[in-house]
Length: 275
Image (cartoon, rainbow, N blue to C red; front, top):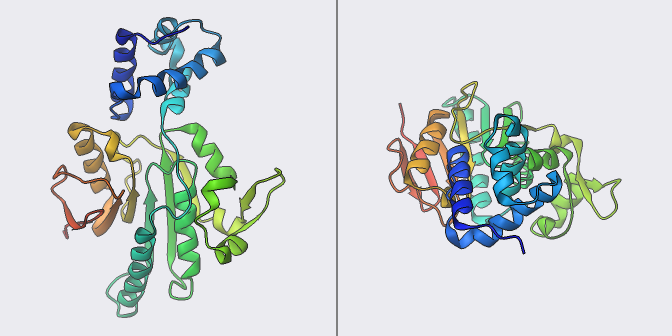
């Protein structure tokens, strides 16, 4: 039986950390080896050692990208964490009120970082369309990024089935989805798809061109980062945020003081300092 030995495990851990900032600890050895095994079978390579040599070589750049796609965790679903979207509902009303008083321009730029297969940015888009009466005439933009090319391709297609759809209220399901040509799938309607721009991006790198986002979702990602990677990612994100913009994290995450410009509002919600 093919096994991933400790030396090979350490080499793969180092590569994944260098590229993505994610720490894959020893408890994930079985999961990592099974995902790597898919790539061994796809490339026809017989051992983890031989595969390691390939992804470390200049000729293996494309396969390195495929490996990173394979080892990235991408499980998600629509309207994950109800309280985040309840807060967003109130946030949109507050923005509208501020704009009516001339206290802010009628624009809202949102970044769904580590968007996986698209459920998060499409959930955000539904929130914006549900509030289109109070956001009438606004410039609304959603950028959705991920390090994994495969999940971005799925997101762009906008076709979903099963458990990922279970949290969508029936009213929204009827309004924003249609039957897909692919049996058993539902497909997001064009009005929803047109609101989201998908792009590949590594959180360890600065957003180019640099943008100013009013709201950033970065959920269930930092739990895989050590303090150094967390600091680097949060610094990059903070640089891309507008003054007094908000950052939404996962319910089990914390910045741990890794970014001084972010002020804690709730356990999962941070705001960039004014200035």
